Length: 308
View 1 (cartoon, rainbow, N blue to C red):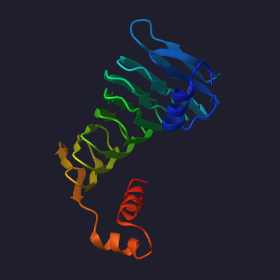
View 2 (spheres, helix red, strand yellow):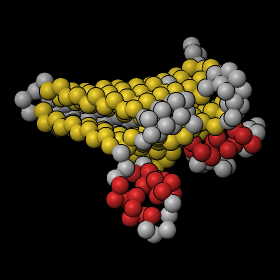
View 3 (cartoon, helix red, strand yellow):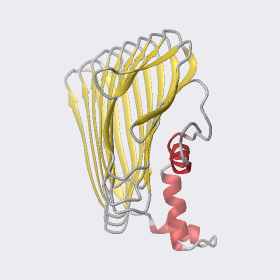
């Protein structure tokens, strides 16, 4: 695919499900360089002139189109920060697929920090998928620090899927969202850490307009000696509704800190938070083991189902 080697193509398949050049608009980035780009009649991708990154302009009324902007790193010691801005016009319905994969077989740390800003027009719907993946047998770390900013106009919808299941040594995710009247934000985070990995997720959601709503749900598994922190705050500044939930499985010597918080600044702000952390129930393991699975196989089945 393009000028990508076998390792880079494997990373691309893991984070974006791509085995060939995608249809529609795309910008493929490998080891700090663009290796392929295509705009369409309704979606224009242009390089920034003042910093590393791109601007994506989606025309009003664009329906059932997609944008793929994955990043792969296969060089040890490479560090980059990329700024991508999305300008989505009114009355759109689009899919945006991002994510980053790092294969580090060296001794130096490799890091990708991506800053994504979304400006979603009135009445538009955006589905956003961001997957992170790490591989390679080197001692250098695989580090990802994504920042996501979402600015939503009236009656717009954003559905965001944030996934990190394997191989990332350190990540600090920060997501900030501001919602106007009638806007709706749905976030589904899935996360697994192992070894000595660390992962932090910070969500700051401001419900500024009447009828706005947010539903932020994280499901995670901490294995071995890894550490996770989930810090989510929903501020209700109007007649709105908000819900945040952290549901986690802890294993081995893992550690999890959940800090859900609510800020009600309006008498008609209806806000709820939930947090649950616990080990795999013994009866679940026994039930699967009676079907012929080993304990390890039963654990994997439970985890896979939990993180779906």
